[in-house]
Amino acid sequence: MADNKSAEFPVWHTPDGDKVACVEKIKVLNENLAELRGLAQDALEDAVLMGCDEKQVREVLAGIVAGLVNPYGK
Image (tube, rainbow, N blue to C red; front, side, top):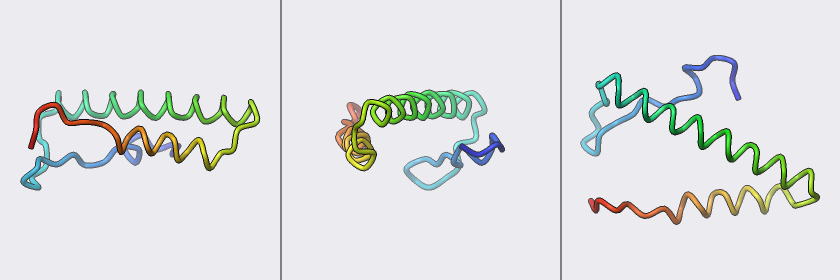
């Protein structure tokens, strides 16, 4: 990960393309993203240390994200 914390997080947008302006919402989004990154990094490191193929682990992690369901519809 980058040393610059601001470089780690995207500029969050609404479905209409506007920037999310609420500081508290941005804080929650960034905290969630940081937690996900940490868990994914730990999972990758554990798998590689146990002899798993890094490419496969990355594919599995990407598949988890691709399979997420939006319970709120569109």
